[in-house]
Picture 1 (spheres, rainbow, N blue to C red):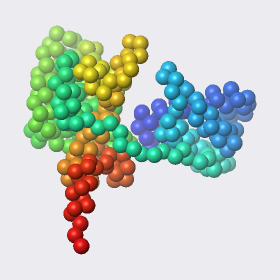
Picture 2 (cartoon, rainbow, N blue to C red):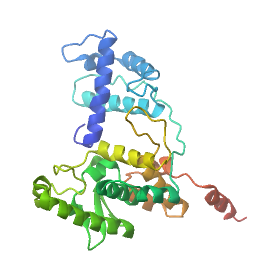
Picture 3 (cartoon, rainbow, N blue to C red):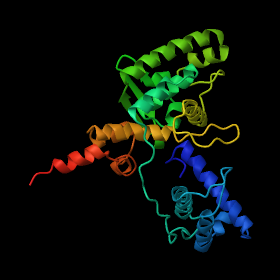
Length: 307
């Protein structure tokens, strides 16, 4: 179970299992000799899924979406499949549980003008290069977190990204991103001269990350996510009502991935080429979540038919 998924997915699994465990205990389920998860039955899973329909598990106090509930069930299914395989339980209690229905709708995608505003927004040098990387590679925030200078080939103008399932892909670097990467590389060199932690990190290719803190440590994915939202808020780009000490916007790394894919698909780039850049193992993923045509492309599609 652990070897087949990345760290972020493992964390998600254990988080979901912990929520299920606490719910079982709160519902009066007694732990057996091997733990409460191993005595749960189909009825327990069904009641838990019903509970999630009205539950608010974070500070936002909003009910969980069908997509989130589907993820919870997927985590439980992965866990119980593993338990059956190694003989910890005799049957999988999730088999008969209905999967929440998720209706896929076009999410936010930014126009070319909005992307330009985001790129030009004020901020720190690191925030600027983070934004350029997100826009021109369509990378996930977790992929940028692990990006090292050794993954960038300035001569060939390519960048290697390591994504879900530890799968890596190499894509070409957009000319605008190349200029920013060279500028950022020089900036880091200057910073390393006066920062011993950064200097030490840069001496070893395995710790020479593109996005680092002042202590020479890789930037957390959550930091990339949060700083992007703050950057968008400061220029008034798709803002949401602000919480206390919080910058909220619909703009996110995933929205930039969607914007990247939607723009390319609407320009006629083949879907398999877009899927390769996004790092999708299946074309179905690209088709379901990113292949939303604009009005002009839909019109041209109909008019292209002859009889």
